[in-house]
Length: 237
Image (tube, rainbow, N blue to C red; front, side, top):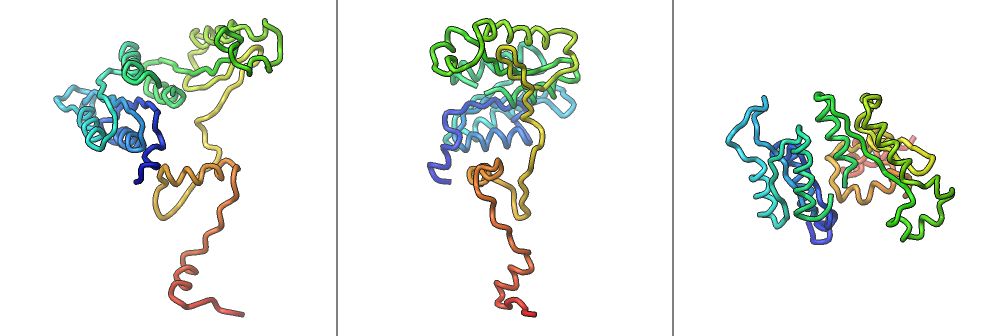
């Protein structure tokens, strides 16, 4: 992989929970391979949740660093409020940042057995910081309709017992408008039979996936390609 390809995730910070083994480990290693800085979170427990002397998070961090990447180990228990806070702070204190939509979905799934709900909000309001930019001037509505209180009302509802049935969702609230975004459902799919997709394949394919590029050429059947390769040609009728 050349230097340009390794920079695909340069500047990104990822927290990967359960990344000492299995799928989480693959996430951590590949993200680091593409230049992300990774918090490798894993308690090192057995399948049944019992403590062990193993330190898989340290081992993954060692692999990432040996390959020239940046990573730190974290053994916070994200089944607790304190542990969830700690792993986020680990990322922020180490590298100053963290993205959260996918994290919302993952934590919502993990915390469901404990009757804990997790939702994310994309807020829009006329605040001191927002007023610095030019986009706020283009928004329709008076000052009341852009009051941050509208965002707070949704937060209060989601935090109430009445919203105990909602979890793992993403909402956009701005003024008098609340939108339910659905970024985690299948709209379409990419398939291939020869191998899996890698991130560099997706740099090319995803624009087409979202209708932003020409459709790929239809591939010929395997039997046809083999006949052509063997010089057999095609029969004329």
